[in-house]
Length: 615
Image (cartoon, rainbow, N blue to C red; front, side):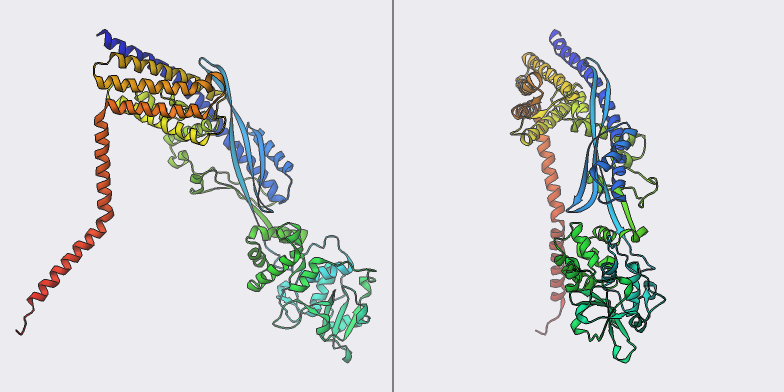
């Protein structure tokens, strides 16, 4: 009887230690979980705030985005630790924000504890642009005036269809004099009325072809005194013209156009002393594309040079002749990049045609397969209409039990991020509540407790082994704050388990129990030894220590299996039956086909044998 009491007493002490330590852990886990929930909310809102800055100004600097994120995080009880702009090459696509929320509380035996719980959120931004429906392509003239502005405005319309009498988008396109009138108005030089080619010829001062300057006009039909066609000289021997029905606004060589009259309007002023070559305009003339678009693509870093931009845009415009937006999107591989180009090239005239969408990006693969977390707002933007977290365990369950599960999920994720995932036999609650449950269940007398203990030890062996492999060649598993406290308690628990199992081995009556408990005692001792260096000497468990923990936990599992040989045969039997069932399911179609084929063959033989023969 005294021997049985000697075996029960260590278990009672172990249960008391587990309850005290487990209570401390769960209290701190609750605080960590609460801080993690608050921190993730703060991170989400801070990321949205930073992304809205990016949405209103696609090339906002990092300091502006951080300032917005810090204001929002502070209002939600957190502190921003990092703001990282996200980009796809030169295209801004969002921002990542990391915040710290503090979990503070009293832990029995350790005094006041404080952990900074880190949370990260990403918000993406996509842009869109639609050119005005009641006017032609707006163009940002970038301070150009006079002749340069006239040519730039006209060159922006390359690709628009010719429409007789047309001078607005509502009419579907330009005619030749309509293009001239538009370009002069855009350059701040309005012409009286709605001049025709003949009217423009009467207004112009004749000039020899060799003296033409960009912005001057060229005519056809001047020999009759009533010209019927007009174009804009663009420099470099090229003319911008709306040619005829069925064609589109384009560049034409001056020498090949049959032009017979040349003139300059006094309103444009004298020709500059020296024309400065415009590389974008030259490339636009070569490939017949809008110059302001390719200039913006190079300026924004989306294309390497204007010739490459012009060549690829020409191909895209051939495929999408009715929409410059679609052509640029096809050229650059996305509507967001096209929107930034059109915004840059069009300037403020684009107005409400430019918009942005802000959305929370999935934090995990599981979130990505859920319903998505969206926040949409136009630019400059209204207050947030919706901020919704991704599909987590708790939100999927949607009840009180789900809320508890969600809190546990958040707490465990935060503890793992803090490096507090040492999982020794006697105190494995640090990794997650499920492991704590196995540890508690292992104290139940009989086979149920042993089965739970073996499962917990297998868990420990796998986890420590993975850590050892992943951290090999480094300083090991870093411990700090609550993680270090938990590891120290774990060391004491493993040492106590080694002594307890050793005592049980010494007092056991059966040889099988003596060997089994002996293995468990040796395994627990190895686990404790693996933790000594990190917990007592430093603040990190080296990879060798993690390997010792994994080996020790494996030896503990071997001890359980040695004490319960029937478990091995049971598992083998269940596994065999499972394999047999899988094989039957896998081969069922084949066996069914063979059976059906045999039946068909038997039927055929029966029918053939019943047919009478003449002999």
